[in-house]
Length: 249
Image (cartoon, rainbow, N blue to C red; front, side, top):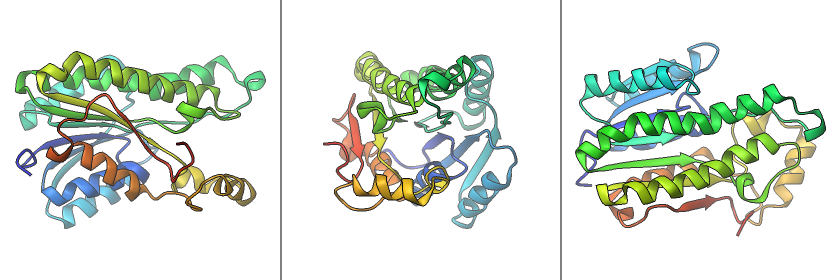
C-alpha cells in the first residue's frame, strides 16, 4: 500500500498476546516497530523482537509504565528523534484487577483506570503532535466487548474500556481534518494468557455464549487492526469495530 513503506509503528502492550500478533502482522510491510511493555522481565519482549528480527525488521522494545504522562511524553519524544516520525499508534496495553464491586478496592479501581484509560490518553497525546505535522496517521485503540455489555466482577475494567470508546470518537472528530484516522477494535473473548488462566468450567460457560462457538485468536484482532491502518480503510474513522464471534451484535 502506498502509505505503508517504512512506516513507524508503535505498539503498547506489544510483547505478547494480541500485541505480539499485531506486531507480526505489521511485519509483512517491513516497517520500523517500537514495542512498549511493562512485563516483570524481558523474556516475552525478547521473543517478539527475535521473531521480528527473523523477518528482517528493525524493532526496539522499551519497558515502561504507560500510566505516567511525563515518562511517556519523554519516550515518544525520543522515538520521534530516532525515527523521525510516528505513523501508527496501537494503544493495546491493559491490565485486569477483577473483583465484585463490594470487594473492589480504590487502589484496584485506580490502577486499572490509570493503565487502561490514562495510558491511552498519555500515548495518544504524546504521538499526535507528530501526526498533525505530517498531516497523516493512524491510531487504533484496543477496547473490549465488555466495555459495551458489561461483565460481573469487572466494573473497573469495563469502565476503562467504555472510556476508550468515548475517547476514540472524540479524538477522531478533533483530528479527522488533519488526515488522522482514529478507531477502536473491541475484542470478544480471545485465546491469550489472560483467558487461559480461567478455569475450564468458566471458559466453557463463556464459549457457549459465542455464536461462532469458539474463542477468537490474537490473529483475528491483528487482522482488523491492520486493515484499519491501511488505505482500504481510509474513509473510516471514529468507529468501534467489534471482533467477537457474534457475542455482541
